[in-house]
Amino acid sequence: MYFASDNSGPVHPQVMAALNAANEGYQMAYGADTLMNEVRDRIRGIFEAPGAAVYLVATGTAANSLALATLANPWDTIFCSPVAHIHEDECNAPEFYTGAKLTLVPGADKMTPEALRVAIQAEETRGVHGPQRGPVSITQVTERGSVYSLAELQALCGVAKEYGLPVHLDGARFTNALVALNCSPAEMTWKAGVDAVSFGGTKNGLMGVEAVVFFDESKAWEFELRRKRGAHLFSKHRYLSAQMAAYLQDDLWLKLARQANDNCARLTEGLRAKGASFLHEPQANMIFAQFSRARHKQLHEAGAVYHLWGAELNGVDDAEILACRLVCDWSISAEEIDRFLALL
Ligand SMILES: *Cc1c(COP(=O)(O)O)cnc(C)c1O
Image (cartoon, rainbow, N blue to C red):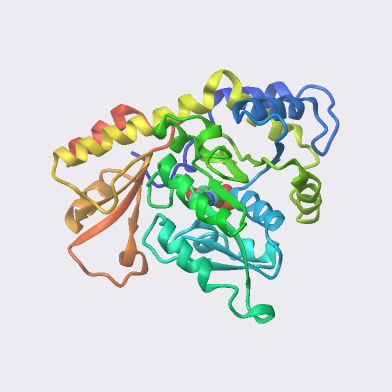
């Protein structure tokens, strides 16, 4: 009953097998391995973007920071949600790599086009003295487990385009959103107006790989230079390629995300049936639910693992009803979900 996060789970066995298979003989280093050629072709095919620039890095923080650095000037400001991972969970790596700052678009989770427009208009009013308007970064699935619809993505990108600003998509849970929307990767990205994507793998069964995809090929060389200068170019790169190749083989990436989402839906329905309340409507593989303090104690004592959410984290909340976050990864089984529900 492990719901702490979707990076707490194991690596999928097919990925481990692919790592072993890649461990035969010799390969050129630094991304010149033959598997990377396969991965590049596959990702271009999946995104229906034959000219896309495709790179691999080992963490989502590196993917986001290096992608944003390639899209932003140091004098820019990057527009994002106040709860964006790039703001709350990356130790200022985006600011470090970009030299830019972040402008938080007011809201509790998803950005709205109206709030984005107001935030953009409020910048660049001070000429040479103020921050210049920079990229818009959207998280899909959001940090609160919500999924932007295609119309919502198009509307946000539309506002960015009105001001000539590039759009970055933080897709640490890209595939969970994709299967929830039942759309194509192209529809969720460049067809909606997204310029660059952090295409996550680690939270969906890989050991540690995220792809960065630019739909504008002219960004390729700058990204390569930034990845190397930022110390994120792996020398034994074939082990990154092997993971991503296994992920994309026979739609494993889609299958794993569906498993995670389906089990999350099972958990959501079970909780709903027992009268639990949710802070956000679960749409992918993450739930923010509320239980009594006594219930949390009982669940934890029975072996359930998950994080409490909000003030309780800081030890300042003595409320009787406490929120928690429950995340389903690809490996959680329906039996474990049912065991958790039975405890309630
Ligand atoms: C997990 C996550 C990342 C990547 O985090 P790393 O720990 O750097 O791999 C990025 N964005 C979001 C929204 C995430 O949930």
